[in-house]
Structure formats: C-alpha cells, structure tokens
Image (cartoon, rainbow over all chains, first blue to last red; front, side):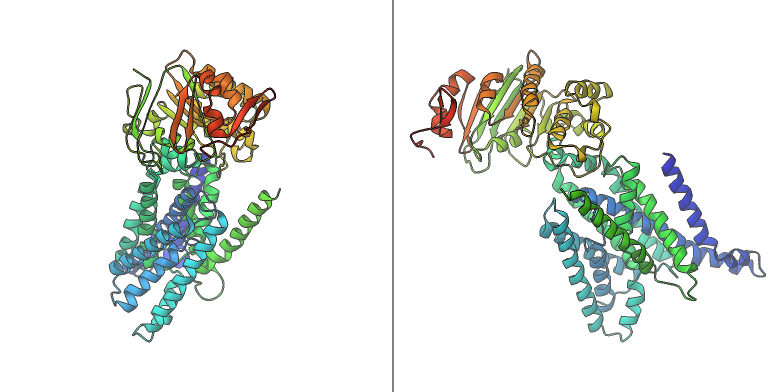
Length: 320
Length: 239
C-alpha cells in the first residue's frame, strides 16, 4: 500500500511538472494577459499532461494483461506487434482511405491492433514460449512497419512521409481536448475492464487446465484481453503515435508490489506506466538539445537496455 | 445416491458416451497405458474443454458455480508442474480461495511450512508438486481429480501422499479419482480400479479382482511373476 501511495504521489508530481514547467507557463498566468495564460494551460498543457497519464496507464495495464495471458514476462503491446498494427491501421485510414479525423483514425488503429494480436495468438499459440512469442511479435511488427511505409509511399499527399514520421515517433504535443477525449475515453474504459479481469488472470497462474477447472472460460478471457488492449492502445496510438517499452517495463515493477501475482498487477502497472510516460514527456521537453525530442525515442532509449537486461537475467536463470 | 454422477460425457476419439459414478469415501485408481484416455476422462469430469453430458457432484452442477465455490466442489491437479510467475508457495495455495485456517491445515499435512514464503517457481519439481497438491486440497473439495500426483515425488513422499489421499477421503463425503501408473500402489491404496483402454472404460472393479484378472495382461502386456511385474511372454491380442 505504501508503495502504491508513493507511486501516486510521484505521478501527481510528474503531472504537475508537465503542466507547469517550464516556469514561464506558470508566470504567464500572472502576466499582463491572464486570459491567454489560462488558455495556454487548458488547451496546451492540460491535454498533454492528461494524455501522458492515460496513455502510460493504458500501456502499463495492457502490458500486464498480455503478459498474464501469455504467461510470459516479455510480452507487451509493442513487442507483440499491437502498437505497430495500430500505427498501420491509423496510417491506412488517414492516408489511403482519406479519413484523417480523430475518430476514424482511432477506429482504424483499434482494428489494426486487434488484428495483430489475433494474428499473434494464432501464430505463437496460447501459451507461447519466449522465443516463439518474440519471433512472432517481431515478424508481425516488421510486416506492419513495411506495410505502413508502403501505405505512406502510395499516399496521394506528398507530405505524407514527413507528416506521419513525426506522429509515428510518438508525440503528446499540441493535442486538442477533442483528441484527448478520443484517446482517453476508450483507454479509461479498457483499463477499468482489464482490471476487473485480475482474479481470472491470477488463477491462470496455476495453468490453463486448472483455471478452466475452476470455471474460467479461457476463450472468452483471451478475446476480452485482445479486444480491450486493442481498443485502448489503438485509440492512444491513433492520437499520440507509437510509444514503446512502457508496456514491457511497468508490469515488471508492478508485480514486485503484488507478490508476483500477474492479474492484480494490472492496476499498479497502470499507475507505474502513467508515471513513466509523464516522466518521459517531461524529459522530452526539458532535454537541453534546443528542440523537443519525440517521446517514443526517449522511452526506447531507456526501455531497450531494460529489455536486454530482462532477457539476460532470464537466460542466466535458466542456465543449469 | 452416489456422490459423483457423470452422464453421457464424450471423450475425444470416442463416439459412444461414457457414464461413471463415484461413491463417497472412496479412492479410485485410474490406470491404463499411455494415451488410453486417463487425462481425457479427468478433464471431462473437471469440465475442462467442452466434454458435453453432465457431471453432478454432491447434488450440484459445478458449471453453475462461481470459481470460489467451484473449488470447494472439485479440484483438478494436472500432470504438469510448470509455474510461470514468482508467487510464494503460500500465496499459490491461497489462489484456491481457501481460508487461512484451511491453508494452515493442508500446509501442515504436506509439511510445507519450511518453504511457504519461498517463490514456488524456484522450488524443485517435487516440492512444487506438493505445493500444487496443497492448492488442490486446501478448500476441502468433494471430488479430487488428480493426474499422477506422485510423479516427481521422492519414494517416502510417494508412500505418504497415497496414504494421505486415502485418509482425506475415507469416511467423508469426498471421493478421489487418481490417474496413476504404479499398479502396486493402486492395489495397496485404492478401493476401486478403473482401467482405461482405447479411450473407454475397459474394466472396473475392486483392486483384487482387476489386478488378478487377465485384463492387465491383455491391456498392459505385462504379467505378475514371483519378482513382481514383467513383460508378458505372449504378445497381447489387443496391442
């Protein structure tokens, strides 16, 4: 409980920091034109800070649920191809079909993420070993990435590549309240619903047969997790682009708070994910490079070495 | 009426349905060559997959109960002992929904006190077996469906466990159906033996009757000699 309180506090601190730093935004509230200051705060800073919290929470919750489902700590929305599938879905909707509204793109991304996850389950099997899961996820990601590039190359708009690139790398900047709603509402619904599956996912830790003998309908559970992850992650990707590794990292820390229980780690993973993405967003704006870094770059720079460490630790543990 | 009544359940690869009932207070050994359908029968009784038909345990249909109550009606122990998550042994037992007292009782009976706080996924296979047995037994289910519970146990625990299982059901409104390969242990501990062959019940009766009939030689291709079991001299007709 103490640890969770700590996470929430840190999260709020990060939230506050992304709202108000750099300090000029706070100062502008008291400057000559306070109306402009409020507008700045409400229309630029608030959506950004809330998006960071919600997108991070969604990645954490989906990561924890997907890991519990595959009984594998190396699964996550990005490594299973759901994120790149969502990006492909959004790109096809926006550039090939020509529907670039937030709602249409969100629908396209949700469909893309769902198809990727279903493809993964049929390719890797339900209780996939790590190598199969990662290879199948890699193949799906690579295919979705190639198809995304192809879709952009075929797009009628000559600026498609440049446009899409900035968005694909992940950005929370300059999103409207409307866009916030399109990402946030599906994500919050998905997180709450996923959290309600925690007892069933904990029972799944005893193995699929035992869970079934206890009355859990695994086909339905699997479908729900795929649909909810696709819904939440898809909607967020459509609005904010692809952000990697949070879905992998957050559940690993969350399970340390839940005695290793994979299901009840979903909510703590959401909190930690929200904290991590808020922090990454803060870094992306405060990094002294003279320009704002795409947030996906920051999460990958920190997340990829962490992933390697996880793989090495597993290999070390399996050594006879 | 019998404690457990299974009607018209379908086993994979068999057209005609299987019927079976188990009496309260009995331990039934389920024997048969590899692939004869022992696990399929246990699955069907535990309502895993979609076996069709109906299973009534102590007057109740388990499929109508939520998980917390279903674990008090029946427990299934699979032959695999794999665990993926770093959950402590005691927490793993608690996933059965049993109360603290019930967990204490079974932890003491299976002598798990020493590693209750340790991560179950890092225990040895035999220790893990005992933790998973405790998980199944903790909520005192009416029907125990155990797939090779003594596999991976050391000789002392193989003996102890069968005695413990017999003791858990004797004189109570509980029944156990235990798939096993050790025919001598079946003879010693079981009240009844069901022999599976080719995905159907080939023989069913008291241990003395079954193990001394020609069924064993016909189905397993082994026979009793002065030194114990040996490969049968004459190839069996069915194999």
